[in-house]
Image (cartoon, rainbow, N blue to C red; front, side, top):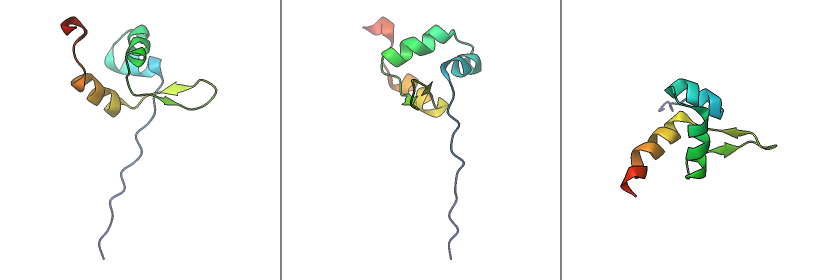
Length: 67
């Protein structure tokens, strides 16, 4: 019988927590969301982010200077 590997669910972080993690201004995280960064709305306006999703989004987006 094969054993399945279950990875722990990645923690959802608030915008200020993401900003602290990456040494950014919280306004940057809000701007990214307006620009299409992946986010999760948990009801009552609670917005959370997964670092892995943001990292992928940042790597794949075009530089604002290139517009």
